[in-house]
Image (cartoon, rainbow, N blue to C red):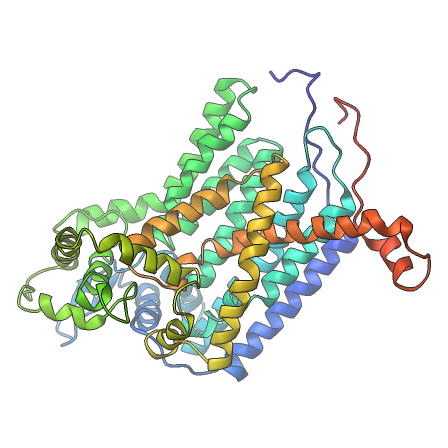
Length: 472
C-alpha cells in the first residue's frame, strides 16, 4: 500500500458554471456543424473512402456483412479496406432509417461534436491534478476546461470532415474519450476507469489501426501507481486489455477466417504502400505524398481470382521492395511525409492536394484548417511541456504521436493521419492557456480595482496555496 505520509494528488471537480459553459459551447459547436453540413457545404463530392463507408454501412444494415458488390454486380466480395468502427456506426443509423447521405452526414456531425465536451473535461483533469505537493486550483481547472472546449469548437480540423463521410470524426471523439479515461485512471485507479480506458482505445483502434500502439500507455499508468498492490495493478491491466479485446476481437477473428491470407485489422496497407512508394512520390514535386498512377505497375500482376488479402500481400511486397531498392532516398521521403503531415513542407501545394485529390473544401475552409493547426501546434506542445514539468500524465500524447510518426513514415504525408493526435493537443493547449492566464492572475494585485483590473482580479486563475503534506 502507498505510504500515508506521501503527498497525494487532489483532483478538483469542475464547478457548475464551468460545466454549463462547456455545455453551451458544445451546443453552439453542434449547431454550427449542422449548419455546415446542410447549408455551407451540403453536397460535396465524395472520395472513394467516403463512397465505401456509406455503401458498406447500408449493406451492413441490410445484413450483407462486410461484403460489397463487385464492379460487374455478379457477386459480392469480402472487404476489410478499413477498420470497422465508422461503417458500424453509420450502419446503426441506417438500421434506424437514417440511411441517406444527408442522414449519415448529420449523424457524423453529432458524434464528432462530442469531442468538444470530452476535451473540456480532459483539460480540466490535466489542470486539476496539479503537482503532488500542492492543492489544485478549481479556477485554474475551470479555465483549462473552458479553453479546451472553445479550441475544440473553433478548430477547423475538428469539423471539416463531417460532410465528407470519412472516419476522422469518430477517431477524434474516441481519442478524446480515451485521453479523459486515462486521466481519470491516473487520478484514481479503479476497475471502472481501466475498463473505460480499454473500451475507448478499442474504438479508436477500430477507426485507425495504428492507434493500437497507444496500448503502451497502460503499463506506463501501472508503473506510475506501482505503490499499489501488484495484484490490484495486474487486475486493472487485465481489465483494460480485455475491454479492448471485446471491441476488436470479433473483427480480428472474422478476418482470420474469411480471407485466403491472414488479415488482422485491414487489407488497406498494401494499397497505400503502392501509391506512396514509387518514382512520383520519391522524386520531384510530389515527394512525400502519393500518386494513384503508381498502381499501373500492379495491373499485370492482379488476377480476377485474387481476394483482397492476396492483393494486399502483393501490394505490400511491391511497396516494400521499392523502399529496399531506394534506401538512401527513403529517409528524405519519410522526413518530407512527416513535414507534410504536420504542415511544415510545401503547405500551398498540400492545400492543392487537399482540394484536388482529397476533394476537401471550400477553399477558405481548407486554408483555415491549415492556419488552425499552425496556431494549435505550439500551444499544444507548450501544454505538454508544462504537464511534464508538473508531473502530470503525458504518455497518451507521446504514444499517439509515435503511432502517427510510424504510420506516416511508411505511407504518405497527409493531415488525415494526425487526427488521432490533434484532439490530445487541444486538451494540453487548454492547460497552457490556463497557466498563461494564471500568470496574469498573479499580477492582478498590482492592478487598479477598476475596469479591466477589477475583472482580472475576479476571474483570473490564481493557484491556491500549497496543501499540507498528506492532505486529502
